[in-house]
Length: 72
Image 1 (cartoon, rainbow, N blue to C red):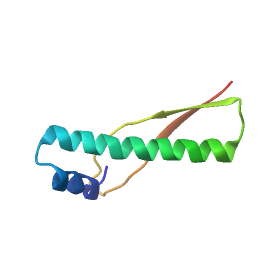
Image 2: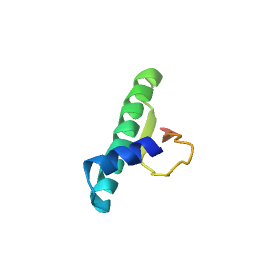
Image 3: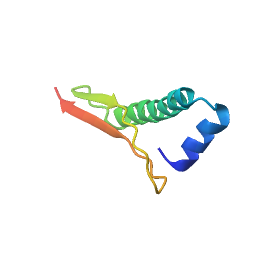
């Protein structure tokens, strides 16, 4: 999560717990979108992809995802 994401969450709510939920939702959405794009590109039905969501705060506002792939 980058500073922009955190600041945007703070705009929507002053409550820290709500901010966490907003940030988790953003990250989860990115992972799920990337999951479907990769699945479409690969096209192999024997590969199992598992989208997993980790929230790491980046000082440089970097964003990324981790998708695990297993051959069935």
